[in-house]
Image (tube, rainbow, N blue to C red; front, side, top):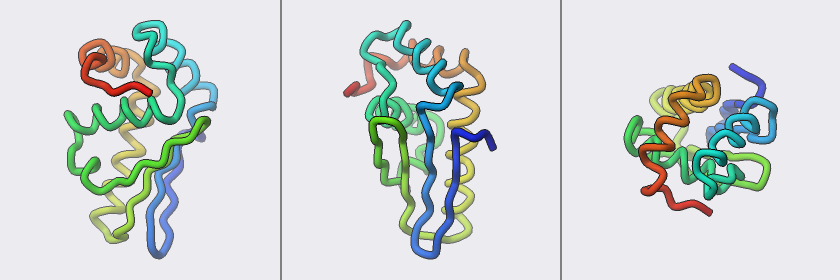
Length: 120
């Protein structure tokens, strides 16, 4: 797992934390803003983008997360800790990492669905 993404499993919650101010996510965020000016990729806009991506690609994750976007990071919490939610948290972290590492997929999705995303 890259240093900009972390999965923390506690007794009563799971947290997926995405450090959007790290080098790779910042680079992607700048590219996204160049494609869609409303996509200034702060925590709120990452939340909007990821929610739309999950809606189309992993709705089972969207059903269990409680996002908590901040200015410099994005976190999502899962309150029910069990084997299934642990797997979903790991899958979510892998999706984020994949989007950051595969800029073309992230940008293609952005171009296709930008009008449906509720930007901050």
